[in-house]
Amino acid sequence: MKFTERIGLTPVKTNLEKTGISIELRNSLWTVILEKIINFRSNQLPYNLKGKYGIYTELAEYYRQVWIHFLKLPIDNLIIFNGSLIGNESLNYLRNWYFNAHWGDVLNFIEFSERFHPDFANACNIFLKNEFSAYRFVNGLLVEVNSKEEIIEIENAIRNSDKFKSVKTHLETALNLLSQREKPDFRNSIKESISSVEALSKIIISDSKTTLGQALKIIEIKHKIPNSLKSAFNSLYGFTSDEGGIRHSLLENDVKIEMEEARFMLVTCSAFVNYLINKL
Image 1 (cartoon, one colour):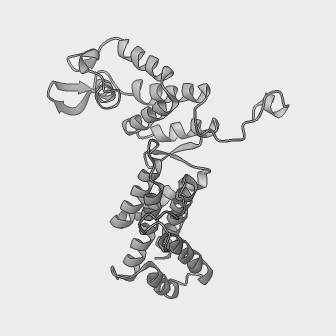
Image 2: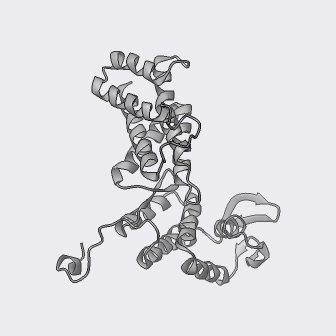
Image 3: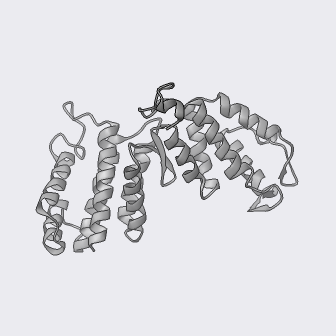
């Protein structure tokens, strides 16, 4: 906490920012772009890509990707000669766009750039946390979260399920559906979250045709899962499977699914996947 916040001279931030980014956060994320990508990528070393127009440097290739696939500008606006980026005009254009763009487009750009540096997401997450943003990088995507613990559970579940392809696919799909800022699909995100537990349970008991409820009964005995924990998860499964639930066709009296339910299910299912894998 800053000195002025401790003495009450300036207000202390307490709410996570969901519908915007502060100028401080915008500045900080631009610094990450500069330090982790633009200043880090060489304008001399060739990128490992032989394209139609020859070999590009690491820096020129980043700008090409931004121009073509993110900004969707004509490539002749980008000044490249013999595969190297020339001058500062492209940087000035990108900087001007960035500081005048809608906050959602800024986060789209940050998410697009994540793939170009292995520590980019971690660096961004520090500033996203410090500036009370409601978003964090999780598995390469910006997702609305409430705590560091949520991020850890989701990331661990995806990492721990590497050897269980179907489980990993369900979790990554749930995360993708939840993180689509333009049109998030909460209902199907919940389906994928619960399916990750169902898939892992079937793998554990080596029966692809069983239901989650039946599988949990066997796992409870074999791996000594507390009955209260099994009952709690059966209840969550029931929420997705009852007459007006998530897995059935949409009805007029269906429960309206919001971000909170979808995030809760992803975090909870991720935690249960971690729990079951550790039990093996």
